[in-house]
Length: 207
Image (cartoon, rainbow, N blue to C red):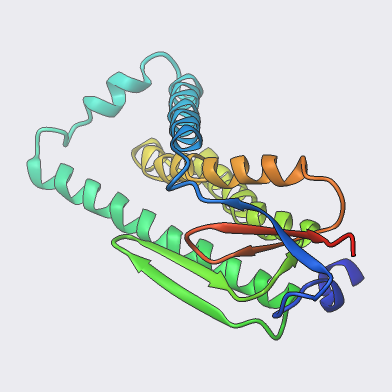
């Protein structure tokens, strides 16, 4: 339990013996942005194929040729419902992020940034490597498990509704996984601060 509540290694102010060693801004790094997009597309493709295999070779035909597929109102309603569920999922994911950020640094202040359908929770805290990794991957794993279980048991007419949200869950994790890959390769003790637009990594000063 001590691992989850260590407030002495997560700070609301940067300690004097730490200095900036790296900035990660995926909006400016075009190469990284392309890699993340390709990774997201790969995840969508692989999961879609798996969904088809999961329901057999006639899954696509069943998906496109349901009894009500000719009813425009039904199709529009289904699409709007999926969009609503995805929006709700994003809010719940950020709620989990907020809870975890508060657990790891109780004195931190949380700010919510709203961008169209997306909500981004940012903290003024500087998290150690383990805390940052745990905060980053936990929401995707938690909702991935929940949605995966639900998709396994719902009737076919609801399978793709749930499964599309599951695809969104893992495809949207591409950027976080890319950042974690960079952070995991960095040596020594580090602190990470995510301000919503860029990620700053601080290392121990040699002085």
